[in-house]
Length: 379
Ligand code: HEC
Ligand code: HEC
Image (cartoon, rainbow, N blue to C red):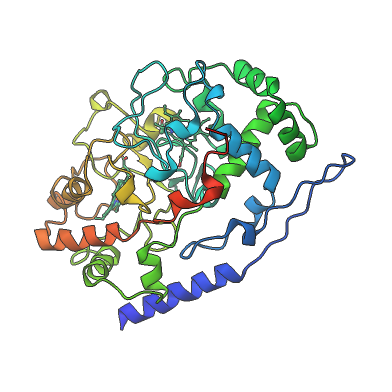
């Protein structure tokens, strides 16, 4: 009965989302300048996602998204013209960079963090503190960028990523004729500026959506459930003492994250000097934020190994083993890690098998095939 109810509820939410269409107001003022407002229909929101946010849609035009896509795939933004944004965010690898535990920049120097997925960012929120005092939103594992527009130019200047200056990246863009018409079409002015580049990159990232996984098709009764995945879903969504109790942070259905910034009991550390990465704690300087990282989405999790902010776990099974018997209860670990006091869920291997089957049902095979997310430049 419980299973039936949750399926009906989720289906109703999804149906509402698809029926909801918002018309943005096109910008006016420049003679002859009339960009095409983006629409929910054109975005083709996949099954399983919440309604596309109207305020985000209002900032998007087809020309802006198209310009952003060209910038995202342009290695000319890096100092030696070898590495584009897409070089570390491969669309066919769930928008991360393959098997690297940490990303490697143009000088061959390894960073300290695992690349992050860039789909469904339209639903992400700017950094804030909730009324319950919980940090939420922002961008990067430690949420050091408050908004997506703050974030998108940072990799260009990051010395271990694209290692360029913003001035040189903009000079490169302004040298290319093809960009002049694209900037005019998107902004009514052919000159590239940092603000317009950030705006276009954010528009493109907002257009990348991923849903329609086997999980979404089961929930919406388009396909039959796989028994193991269903058992895993129930365990994932159920609270302790019987369920795996993942739902406080990775909301089942929709986006599979609350966007909150939390400490999932990875480290045994009790003192600041012991941490190699303080996460949000390094940004705010607050002791209570030590070891807190953004709760990542679990969509396409089968494609985005290795896992965690530093890529420490090579396989999904290793992640499940962490939650099963590797938790460290400290003054920093989150109170929502309900099993931390006993080191983890202490499930049997069979129980972990079904959880894994559920996580594997979150893969969107159509993501890498959509022409609107591909490299627009001629090979
Ligand atoms: C050298 C590899 C590399 C390149 C090149 C790169 N990124 Fe990233 N990206 C990463 C890594 C690693 C992270 C996580 C870094 C962190 O948390 O400190 C990240 C995080 C992000 C995030 C945060 C997502 C979230 O949910 O918080 C966005 C957005 C992003 N990158 C966009 C871009 C854009 C736009 C470009 C090009 C201008 C780009 N990246 C170039 C590796 C790269
Ligand atoms: C208290 C909140 C919380 C709970 C409960 C929780 N997680 Fe997480 N999860 C996180 C955070 C935070 C991270 C990222 C931590 C990091 O990178 O250091 C994460 C990371 C992950 C990752 C790696 C994702 C990636 O892209 O690298 C997986 C997989 C995962 N969790 C699955 C689960 C499962 C399965 C459960 C239930 C057994 C669960 N989580 C319970 C907060 C939580």
